[in-house]
Structure formats: structure tokens, C-alpha cells
Image (cartoon, rainbow, N blue to C red; front, side, top):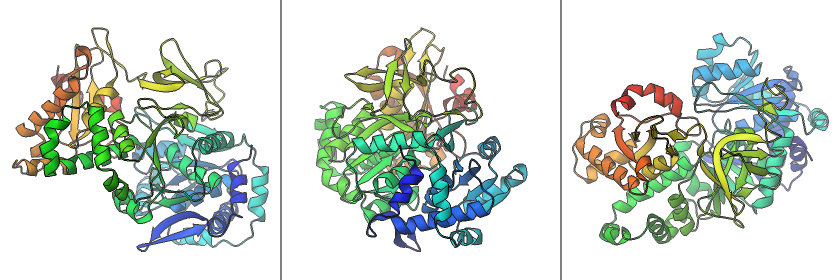
Length: 561
């Protein structure tokens, strides 16, 4: 099995008309072919080596997703060093913890916002000896470093498949992140298997915007090196809508929250159309799934145009995708193939594909993956994709975190005809005082289908009944209020108004109608602000940090009982 740097070395010889990356600079889209891309990677590799970075050293990257992130990662890997990603929206505490725990001595920083974070923190992390700042003189000098590619070729030839490649810190839903140690074997097992189940080649193009500190985002970039497709870097999350139309990608890799927002936006637009208003009673006669299919079919042409007109499929991972949203996009001719994986498994271990697809599941295992279900329902996995171990703990105990060679995922599920069905996180399952188990994500996803709902936290462990904290999408809620002639002073005032509460109560009642009595929401509270990554309530992959929120909103939750 070749290492990713070996594949990169071969990729440098690809035809000159094959684009490796595309990015926007000074308002214009620019691109690099594989030879030009490799030249920049080589220059940075030479700079890092000249700066004293050696094989096995840790180099941290703090930057938003951009072409410089990709160049940095591939340069670090190509000299046998270890990449340590840092979440750009993480807290200062998490940032400092990652730098100290990893033992990184070199830091690459991108953008003024991230540079300010580093300047605020650097006095407390004296171990960083060299800081390379993207777009400033240090970066320009690094990419101007002279020298042929002999040094990098020599380094690549010495890298083995079991050498450490990256320490990826889990975003976690509680506590400080843990370092997941990945070798080149895990990387290559992932990209080769993904390439084998999806028909992608150098003619394809993705729009990349997931944080590269999230392993799914980096798999997208690593996969392009292996396959040869073009990675186009979105200007920002806020510009995704425009960038989709501008570059017309053929595939998209994202987390469910992105598709939820797109779906909610479409629902909002639909509600304003007269023919939809007239058809509402008719649509309500159908099941939610049938309604989604009808809407998707009707909006197929408009939706495809919004994605640039060339989109063939999307891959969703990181959290469960609501079935009705999947049905909607499928009916519109834009299938979303839901997958499942963890940081510890180098992203996907199962995925739906064009050949094997079943709604309500996360697909079949990738070629080298073996899955078994423990007596308590926990999903256990054996694969070359599974991490070497947690950093600094990889030799702890006979098997470390493994059970007879299988890694316990912490997720509950079962297999149906070879397809994996996820019920919930093992630690997230709620057990009421009546002894009934409730899967909170089922309730939360049902409520988030509505455009005005942003996030939901369901609570009820060891309690008599289930309650929920609900946050609102500010722009959609204001639009809804104006459509319904509801007066308000500001968003906080609106969020606590009687009309909003009555509207949310109807949504809760509708969701409850699909549930058993013991798992239905009996009481709820609408917060006057949304959850954010910056305030610590969401992980960088936009999942709610349950334990953190349970503590932060303890008084609000207790008041519901």
C-alpha cells in the first residue's frame, strides 16, 4: 500500500490541463494544476526542513479551510512530520490544550481573525518556537524557498505506511478534546475504499468548506490527491450559495446541518408561493415522506440550478440526516448518500452509494470494515481505518480502547440486510425514571425540519417526562413574523412572544403525534438566543454539546419540571 505522499509525487506528473485546486483571490477564481500544486508543496516542505522541522515533529495548523491549509498539510506529511489541526472556532482553552498536549513547536496561522487568537494566547504556550503566518512575509518567503524536489523525494521514500501522520483532536460533546493518532495506513485505507464505491474521477469537482480540523473535511482533500478531481475552496460559509452557482461542483461533502439549512430555506420560500398555500390542505393528506417527495419533484429544476446545474450527488456525515430531507433531495434528482464514521475511524466506515442505498440507514460497510453488535446494542468495528490509539495512550493496557480487536464506537445500532441503522449515541440515550429509553436525536430532528427552528436540546434522563430547549433561526423567525404581521422590537423580544410560543407548541404537538407517549415532549422552553460554536454550545461540526448545555441551562431545564 502506497502512502499519500507517494501518491502526491505521482500526481505531480498528471496532465497539465487537470486542475488540482481552485480558489478565489481578488474577486477572481484562480487554479493550480497538479504540477504547480506540487511545486508550492515542495517549497513549503523545503522551508519547514530548513527551519528545523524533522521527521516525527508535530506541526499545528490554525486556519479556516483554504488552499493554504491543503498545501501546509501535504507539505508536513511529505517530510514525515505530523499534522495537528486546530479548530478555527474552538475556544482558547481547547486551542491551548491541543498545542500543549501535542507538543507542537511549529504553528501555521491563516487569516487575521486566527492570528489575533494566537496573539492573545501565545504567552501561555511558550513551546511554539516558529509561527508561519499565511499571506504575510513569512508565508511568501516560505513559498519562495529555492531548491529542487530531491529533498522531498528523499523524505517521501523513507515514509512507511505505519508512520504517524496526524493527531486529530476530537471535537467532543463534553470535556477537552482527545488526540486521535492516525497513521498513513488509516488515510490510505479510507481514500482507497471511498474511491472504490463512488464513480469519481479527474472530471469531478467539489466545493470544500468543512473545517479541515474535522477529519471528514480532510478526507475530501486527501481523496482528491488519490483520484485527481478538483477541490474548489469556498470563500466562506456565508458565500457557499454564491460559490455553488459560480463553480458548479459535481459533488458535495457536508454535514447534515448544511442540508437542513438548505431545506429550511426552501420550505420558507415555498410557504410564500400562492399555489403552495392553496395546496397545503391537499399536501397535508399525504405522509411526511410522500410530501417531501412531491415537493422535491416539483422543485427539481430550481434546486439543481441553485447547486450550479452539474451536481450528481452529495455525501453527508458527522451526524444523522433526517429521512424526509434525504427523500426530498433524492426526488429532486440530487441524491444525498448518508455515511457513518468517527474521528477514530478516519471518517467513513459505512456509506450509502449509488449502487447500494437504503433510506433510514447509513449504508453498508466499506470493503475492509467488519461490524458486529454488542449485547447492549453498541456498534463494534474492526478495520485498518481505526486509529492507532489516543495520543500518549496508544500503548495503554493490552488492547487500549479495543475489545477483542474491535473498536467500541459508543453508538447504538443494528444491521438490516447488511445496512447499518444508527439509533443514537450510547451516552446520549435518555432513560426516564419510568425505565423507558428515549433517543433524543429522533425528537430533535423532527423539530428542526421547520425553518424557524435552529437547534434543539432534549432532556429527561432519570426524570418523569421529556422536555426540550429550543433555539430559533433569527432571519427565518423575523421573516415569519413579518409574513404574519407580528410586531416586535428585536429578536429577543420576538423569541419570547406569545405568537412564537404558540407556533412552536404546534410544532411540538406535530412531532409528538409520531411518537409513543413516554418519548414525547411534555414541556419546552424557547431560548432568546441560538447555540453557537464560539459560546461553547456546539461542536465545530455543529452538534449540540449535551453535557455542557445541560449544565449551562440547568436552571431553565429544572424549571420545566
